[in-house]
Image 1 (tube, helix red, strand yellow):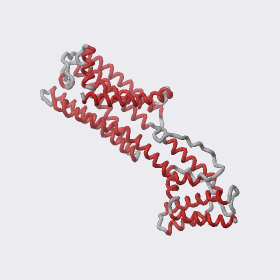
Image 2 (tube, helix red, strand yellow):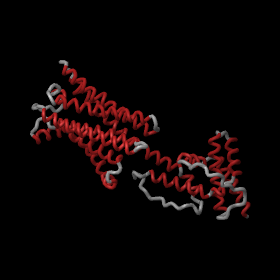
Image 3 (cartoon, helix red, strand yellow):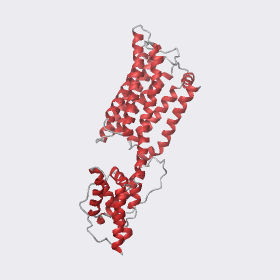
Image 4 (cartoon, rainbow, N blue to C red):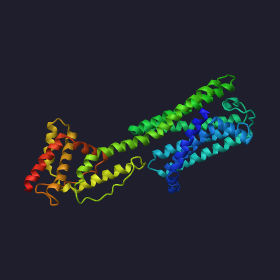
Length: 397
């Protein structure tokens, strides 16, 4: 009973996740191949778990009245999951030519649909009268047509697992952080699929053909590889999503001091910050909104940048042992903060002095803004800002 419960709970969770994404899939009307691939993987994955449960195997065989009817059903579900995995990885990675990715995905789907048809036809042509719930592939390893069906399913599953493992490992070299960890977990999980599960089954079947009994590989080693490999695959798909959201949340929090500082700039393009729950899947919108909010106000106050503030802060930072890049960031933060202060002290009119616009620099990235935000907390920026405010207040009286 516990074994069945594990299959059904895991399958139910995957099915629920698929149903939650169904409204977005309907709105996309088939144009979002990545979303379609995710839904297909969730749906087929739940099918694999439901059909593989021992109780389901018993019920299906008894309901249909066909011995071992569950065998081709499970094999079709597993090969379908294999195809969905490859299609998802291809669309997840994307590429400059979306049309090529879509055509390749369509070819893979067509190929594995053909595998489904062949599995059903081979089972219908073969003869498997004795019900075998746990060692079907080993028991019928020498039966005409059934033998070919088993080999076809193992090869289709193994090729897809090898392809996913290779794609994920190669892609992991180009990314960092939680994305790299997730992709390498996927690569290892799929490696265990084809090297552990499929490899053990094939070796055991080959041994049976030569008159040897290596059944422990099919009934012991292969199943024992299933759970850890499935766990790694699940972690591999979930970790980049969770990791990206947590990284976005950290970035959003890091930009807080800078957002509060530039909030005093009047006349900047307005931006309505949406009230989004912290758990929303669109949390990256929060980060984008805050970044845009900050960038617009920095541009709006560029007319009040004072190069003397920059020089003063840079010299103080270097005197305190800051490196060249850190000193530049500290000086930039001090100049921005001093420019914002002029609005609260001098008002809308530009203050006297050599303010400069300078040539427009490259757009600031989220990382650049985060460094500026951290620099506002340094002693150098606080001291330079305090002296600048004192000078402005003295000049305005």
